[in-house]
Image (cartoon, rainbow, N blue to C red; front, side, top):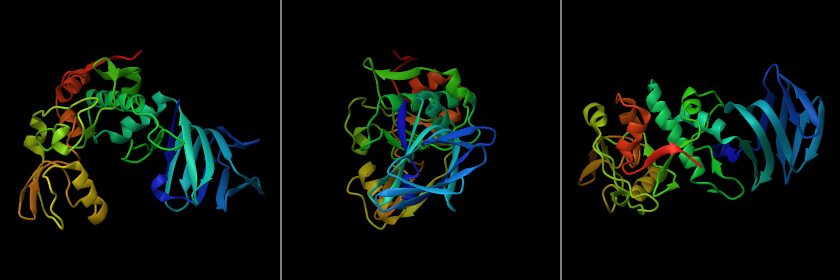
Amino acid sequence: MIEIAIFVLFHPQRLTVKAVPGTLLQVNEMTIAGGKAVGLRLVGMEIDWFAERETRTARVVKFKGDMFVSVPGKIERRYKGALTVTPDLGELRAVLTLDVEDAVGAITEAESPPGAPMEAKKAQAVLARSWLLGNRGRHRGYDYCDTTHCQVLKDSVRSEAAVATRGVVLTYDGKVFAPAYSASCGGRTKTAREVGWGAEPYPYFAVDCPVCEREEKEWVRELPNVPGQVGDEGARIALGRKFGWDVLPSNNYVLAGQVARGKGRGHGVGYCQRGGAGLAEEFDQLLRRYLPNTVVGVGR
């Protein structure tokens, strides 16, 4: 089992949880029938929660079942598992506890490019599973968040790719590791050192990507600030946080004065999602192509 904090970008002070029609939802000491909702509101260091025309106050509200969870007026998603809601630094912290394979399925469907073939989705499932098993405890009090800082997690859905690769992981030097991947490398992936990362536990390698080289359109950006080193991921992230995430779309670019000209989306390290989706190869071949010297197999 793993723990993932949901809706962290919204800093919610209110939440609504509703049982999926035809199911029952356990809420602390109560059972809620399908279609009925529970409202939660942060009040100081406690939570007022509303159900069955009654208001209760608690420090912790726990749910278990198949449920729709929403930040009212902003976002709603469907999850299956156990949800624990607590006050945390002026907002509601909602942490979902679910089976690793359920998380792999949700991440696979959220992260795969539109129209990706089954083999590319299988590769994505192995990447997600390896990342989850090789990277626990990234946050205080829970393992992961549901943003690009960790892994994008949307609705809980069945993923045939996750089922077909159940238990399969990537290892390097005999150990499961958390592999990096990006939306599009722009024609050539980056090594860890090229983007300013350490080479442990996996060094990554520069790999030519014929799909991105052939199909990715060039972008041009006039930069408000010039990175100290071309391709440094820390500098790209800093620019994105200050000026917007599209100010420097990828690390695959050349610089002329303050004008960057490049291709791709994302850091460009490791597996390329655009490239993998465009190659007619089996999933293990795709993984070994973009992540050389790794082993694809069932974990122990």
